[in-house]
Length: 153
Image (cartoon, rainbow, N blue to C red; front, side):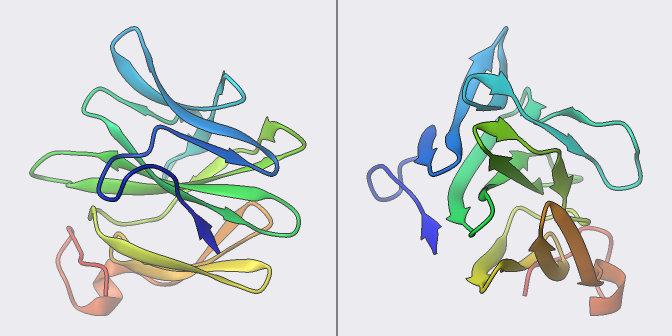
């Protein structure tokens, strides 16, 4: 189940989940995802070095999934014309953020649903699952027969 709060259409800034408080906070002019006040990090596709879930152009906290072993935030980092958005999933256990994972692709649209102990997604032009802190991609944008920007189906 996806947990969201706030008025319909209003952007989320905080979600209190079973495993921690996810929040979008402005730190020195940059929007950043935090878990219990500490910056969350993620690994971008094609890189090995974790970086903060942050952006000058903004972050959207879409909602939080409650899985048996962790709470998982779905975040979109807002981009520009070349890449409208990047989807990131960040888990939390026992009040601490787990290293987040970027969903490959470049599109600000997507759908996700809880499927047992996993999250199934179609986002950024990719589809796959998230389980135990890891993303498994079963189809990438090129496999959909689309260009680099992709479109969630």
